[in-house]
Image: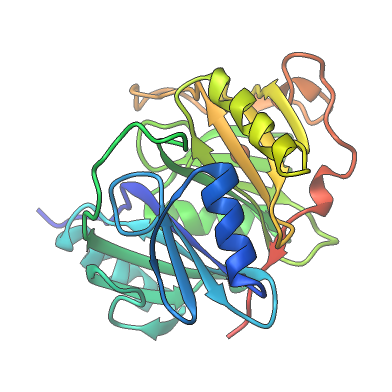
Length: 294
Ligand SMILES: [Fe+2]
């Protein structure tokens, strides 16, 4: 049987940083990731047991360097590689572009986002019980053409739409039972950007402890905790040095029924964003870091 090719997990996010030590310090001391490895140009951090779930790359500009997606096996990886070739997307490397990965390739997709699809990242540390999140969860991307981006994610990586907001304002897509691994928001007047990256915690108590650590470091939450409608997660956000938002969340909807239809929210219904009071910061969409061009 030939596979059609799908990713099975969100792997990691790589961000350009002008101040590697400051970015690394905040991710380790405030968010609570483990600092796994540091080189002159890269900092590798993780919440789970893999070598990296967050990479900061020394850069002249703040931005999103690339997004790592996990293929479950070599057959799916090969099938995705073939779809990328047929789609005419520009391939940057036919091999993994980070260390400690067995097999993978990287290419530039719609609106300049670089994708690294791979399998076989090394397990580095399976200790548990730290104060940080359980694992990396999802990214939220601001794009000019949300419909084209969603078509790409569905066709090339096998994502499924879980929720949609309005005709084409936002889409939440999953690649496994978790409600969303990638959210896409139409922000026509903005550069294509990573709006936020998100990390799963055990309980709402962890969101409070995050706020405590921010306060101790002279900072504060940007928003939350609040209950999102789309995804059902309770979420809290802070602003990281590069100006991307970072979300810590818990209690996300898990979807085990493949026949569950996409939930459609009216654009005017603020409940998709906040179930508790319908309110959200007016400048929410202003945040994010643009794609780093190659
Ligand atoms: Fe999110």
